[in-house]
Amino acid sequence: MADGVGDASRVWVQDLLWWWKSVDPSLNYQGLSATEIQNCDLAEFENLRIFLNPGGNTYNQLTSLEQTGRDNILKFIQRSSPSAYVGFCAGGYLASKEYYWESALEDEAYFNNYGVAPTLGSFPYAVEGSITDIADDQFGDVEPAGVQYRVVNVSNGHKMLYYGGSTFGWNQAPDVQDPNLEILAYFTDFYGYLSYNLPAVWKYKNLLLTSVHPEADNCTTYDCPPAGTIPSDNILQNRAWLATYINTVAGTNFKIPAVPVQPVFNTIAPHESYPVKSCYGGGTPGQAPILFCDDFDVADGTVPSGLWNWQRGQTAFNSPAPWNTTYTSKFGSPSSGNGYAIASQDASNSNWASMSTFPVSTPSGTVLSFERRGEMSRGGSFTAQYTTDAGSSWTNLKLASLSSEWQKEQHDLPTANSLQVRFNCGGSGLCALDSVDIISSNSLLV
Image 1 (spheres, one colour):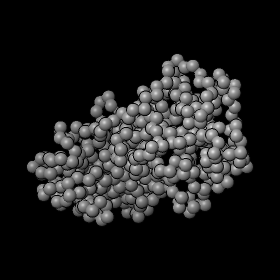
Image 2 (image 1 turned 45 degrees about the vertical axis):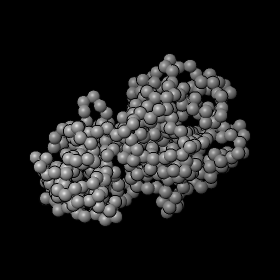
Image 3 (image 1 turned 90 degrees about the vertical axis):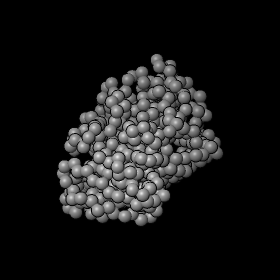
């Protein structure tokens, strides 16, 4: 597809297929433009076994495909004779029932509103991304500035490139339990608010969908990683792993090229629970005295895992941007430690981003403590609220005047069986947050 396919993604798929065909001449492949897909009844070609959808921009791909092209792909997936769909990154979003893009829902109603063909729905569940905890070109530590990709560890021991792909169980898309679903690889260093194991690659019936880019290599043009970003042995290892699973999902037996480092097919989930942050002082989250805490810091030698214990949301598509963490000095230093949470907005006053704690039971005398700073303009606001009815209604806390310097605040919270606190950043400005604690006794606060 010419429109919506990333230049690097096109190169990666071409390189993968060239490499694969080099040892098996029976493997034939053909690139198709969006117009050609519209004019081709893919399902009628019995020898066509696999449709590979590259990464890029899902919305733009659907726009260029139009309803006819989208339907031709769906008919191919649903035909009675063998077929397989392989979706890399954007191709995974495209296969889903619906998706959240940085907390904004893009479902059938959304696409209908813009006159764009909806997603395929072959994977009958919601997915979400990008996983800004992994790579966020606005607040993250990716270098050089503006780079959106990052090499990540996956649960089989491989290293793969992440470039904005989807998952589920991270923030808003629920975890999926389905006998037809097989998770082939998870993210090793990251967690979700809804599930502590985040899928990186999964198989569903005749679909193979990826959040990461196992097909990626280093190339010298477009938005590819520079030479050496992914070690050459890992590139070939990933290709052999991917080709094996493509054969599996398609029921084909194309020969796999020999590689210097053998692929690993371990599908065991890496985590049995969430990690416990050091700010609990050895205590248990949700239990007295420290019911909730986050200092947003990362221990030396570990990968920053982001805001997995916060749920993030926003009120308008793609504006404002969700909260995230930062470990650079670009937006100033933290109040303490080496990281803090941040949101930077440039939106109308009716739009805002929020992040809320997980629910805790609060006895009498519970206190919320945090440090914040910010700079606002054009009606910007930085607010804090709590709910005792699972978000049906929210009560505003009366905050001190906002300063560009870190200021500590303490607020009494009501007795409740289930209470959540959320912080909102709206309008135009920058909001920074650090050292958040919900403590069942104010005698522990200093």
